[in-house]
Image (tube, rainbow, N blue to C red; front, top):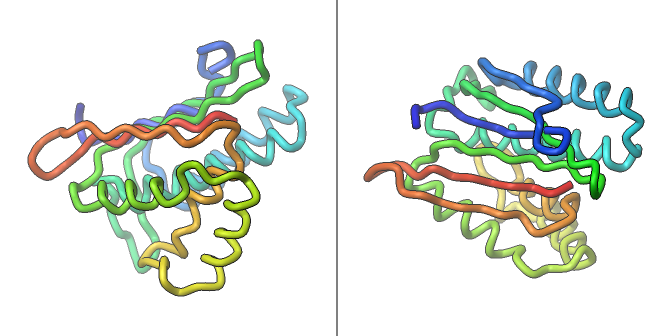
Length: 180
């Protein structure tokens, strides 16, 4: 695996959207808007369109914040080389958003802690935690308020699936799967 980010956002396993290149805030918004227009043109339900849009944004923000090849352009402005695609399964009207990227060892514990803190929480408990954490300064970090994984859990049909595979002494391959 090279130091490239892969984001998989396919109809019945075939990609319906692909992006390859530099991902930054501007490209993230342009890609999200393109995905939104594509889903609307396919008559996707409004709530699905909104959830895919929001989860795409959250996923890209996490990649920008944690990927080992993320470059800080200026304060709170980052860029990363990225490939992405979106999948849709007609059988059960489900979208799958997957990402896979290299992260530094120290970010593994941070991500795992955030996922573990919301594992098993129902939607009501997640909403309470979101309100509590959005008012608190405890979980904030350099790149945001630390609410992304809570939002992802709220918008996903199933719990967030994550996997860490050691890549070398200093990095892990981090894979995330969201079912929308």
